[in-house]
Length: 173
Image (cartoon, rainbow, N blue to C red):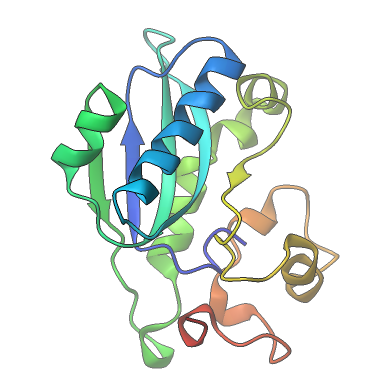
């Protein structure tokens, strides 16, 4: 599902607060500040603790306006990394193989230690901004992907697998 929304960038926000509510509020304030500066931005995000230091950082799959790394770093107050998600070849370049790979990386802790991942993320697998799914509700997209998928698979299903009932995210403006 995360790949279904056709994210364009993979963003890492470093040195996130250790406690859930301050972290959540910081991500929310960042989104509000970006929108106040005129950026159209939607994202899905998850928190991860570094393997060596335990330091928390936030992974975002983002679509909308490109936000310069300097702007993000200034608003976040820490180091950030912004990477373009490459477009896969195939059916009109829409197979989303790269976005699926990145979504899987962003959610990797959910696959190896679900209890820890949920604890780091306020009890959720990931968090979506209101328009991340291009105007569709989570349950509508989930119903199309497949009720037979296991608990983790919905994260990785590429957009090309979505049936004809919903238009491709690139067709929705």
